[in-house]
Length: 329
Image (cartoon, rainbow, N blue to C red; front, side, top):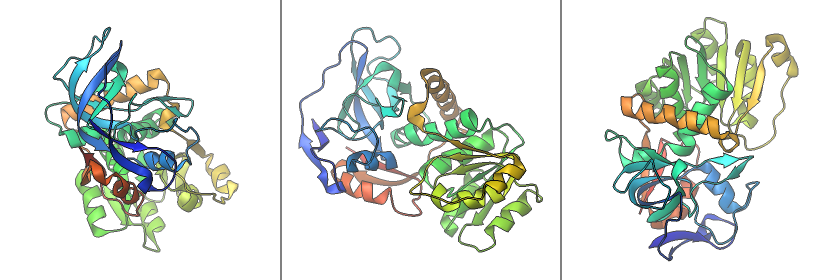
């Protein structure tokens, strides 16, 4: 079988498509024939050597994928050969224990608890877009911010992978959804996915527009993917006892603590791989149900062949990414 292998940390071109030995399922393990692979920013951090936890070299990147179960090992009870599934990473204390063999491949070996049913009304590409993006969107909205129906949520860059899922989950939960996007196409997408209001974050008065949508009260929850750019302004448009959930950052930021003090606001950090086993099971029970009901439909922005993995790592870090980037074996 073929798989992408990384023999040294570095730029995207350290990823090479190679022939590797066939996989064998041990006790509690499942082998899945891969139809689609999800590319995540965290994959690029690990490949570059910047991530806190580094896998032993050589390794195959990736944690998210979808496909058909080919075989199962002893003690596997909840999944059988022939099942359509998606695979999602889990973690503990900030380290990955996603797939055992890595997702950027024709087949993958994983633990039974990492395999989830993929409903017939979802494509393999959509299944591959669930793991990290939908997992962190759900965790940020409901396990960290404790969002409830009737509250407002601001989702920055609502046309990207995590953000498009967050729009759908928040709308289905009865929240008032405000999205930002830098292009007309991105704003149209956010509206189609369920956002009640959208603004151009390049506009000089976009913060004032957001406040107008809340009749001056401010937003209850902000999902922040680029906190080094936005956090200071986020605090200025929060409602009383509002919450900012920091999902991503690419540097340091300076804020005025008085903006948080006067609102009694909360700044929450989150990382999917810190979720407990119980949190993980809750997340995916909710996501499986959302896929089955049709309230969640991951947006696929681009598909590339597995051999183009280096290009996918460049594309996923470009500004204004539209939907999810998928690799196809």
